[in-house]
Image 1 (cartoon, rainbow over the protein chains, first blue to last red):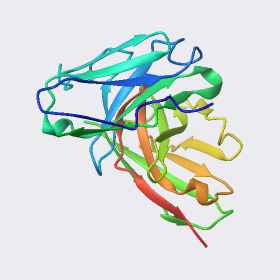
Image 2: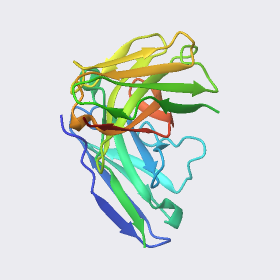
Image 3: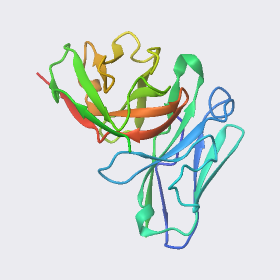
Length: 111
Length: 120
């Protein structure tokens, strides 16, 4: 089973909003409301920023929001800041046999 | 605050066994139901979930490594371990241990990662 599909890279200017898509299938993203998102700054470990499609853990800025429609999940970052420059990964449960799947990652550049 | 730290050999010979340990501080691996996981990141690639062991000892592994992987809990309650047998160059990666809040992912704490090379 292939990884979830994300755009390889995106860029935006400070203050803008950007949306990262994550496309899966009816067996993972489309079936379960168990999508999470991770932010990985260069040289650091990933950090959970969204779980269960649209829930923010304590400490995650409300500039981060997420949603899901059909087989595609989306992460929106509003009011872009230089500190948001990082790689972002989506993740979905894919059933008991496959377990957990990650997207290929999207490198966000803040211009 | 929970902290995780990977340790183990960083160089493994082809066909040999990769072994890593994750030490958990600020909590016990068997006191509350969590899913102690191993995730790897090959150079320039995305994240790949390998498997987990729950606090109760049940395991689940990704089909791509299921025949070669083992994850175990240490009786001390502060560590869990990964073994991956018959390694090849394709197993060279940055290996992370992480705590899953649910069986479905939601990895809320991560180690800093252990870079493992495979070479003779």
